Length: 246
Image (cartoon, rainbow, N blue to C red; front, side, top):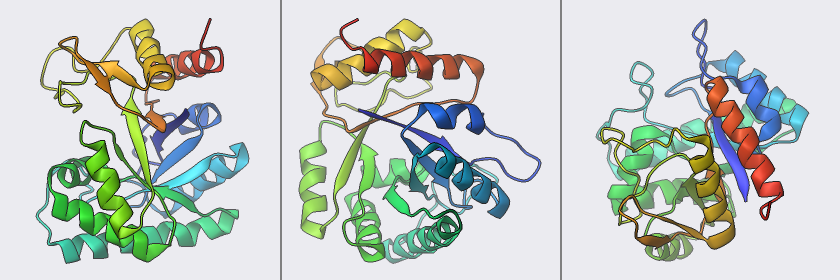
């Protein structure tokens, strides 16, 4: 079970996250491409950090929404989605060359990620853009109860899927993340976060917020490292995954 984290999301004098502390603890870095966060120097520094620690680089494209950090839905046609995806992937791949890296996977950000999971036509547009950019390039999406349907769609278009789970978020009975507007949507107890990480890694699923078992096979766990408590949680998850029976 690999750990992934959204990184490179600073912009100019505005600092986001603790990338230097997080990078040594993870396997996969989802690097902002400049549409929701990051500028060329932030991207370059993030890629250099990933290269130094041997971390896989994933593109983290979004809607063109710097003021809203990519968290606002913006209407686009499927053709426009393909164009904005390819634009960002091309930019990041060009910068990867400076560090001897390449994009290993793609993980859409924020509202784009949410919208494509609700709208099959948008998801197909994202899949087509990834397939166009490079044959065999995987797309990372959240794992839900509909994961078999998503796998079939991706297979038809010719894109490998990476299924992502969250150790610090509650799930509803449909395998969707509980809205942050609801109490208990984000796990604050480090022991509960580690327990959920182990549940995904060892048992292939998790219990929903109402106590129902969800079979959700995940390839990667998303972790967050924007504060000291989050860093401690990543370290605890890493240790627990290394010693799952302890």
